[in-house]
Length: 208
Image (cartoon, rainbow, N blue to C red; front, side):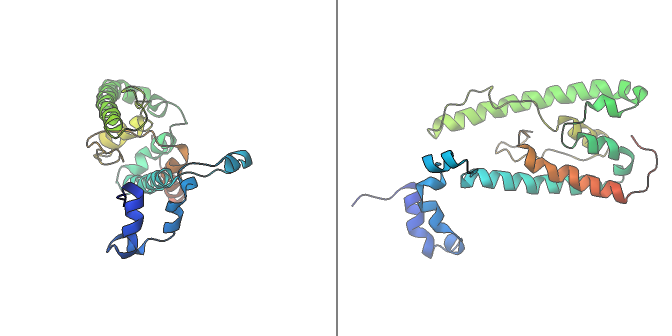
């Protein structure tokens, strides 16, 4: 009898497994179309993601909510709230646009070092990601293809330099000490929305 491996082995053990026996909708994982869209679903334009992609989106959304809560609880949030709100979705301009000219002149060298360090660390993370994909027999990944612009590097700089928040745990990357925030736009929305709710409740003293 052929030995079951991978997903088939998991499905065989799942009903009696102490941890995974309570999973709901397990039959879905036995359907090949769960992981590979069919010609019918592609033709119908049905937007479905495989479970691992759904998990990544949901984890990203929860992480964004956690980051937003951490930001709004800091005493300095009120002073920097407009900059943080504008940078939360990386769609409202450069960090320099939110800082007074005099303050930006003092902060610019530190930000440039911060951005360079983040880029170097993420380049190393991309190499590890490519090596992991090659080892597991996955699709080929070039070391540079996973290193896009760090979506939250400006926000992280404000969080660390102005609010005193360490951001090394913000990323969901497997490699510790990396800052790969190349998540899709939808999970990032809770970050901006949570900050916006706090902003609407706040009194409007002058801020950056």
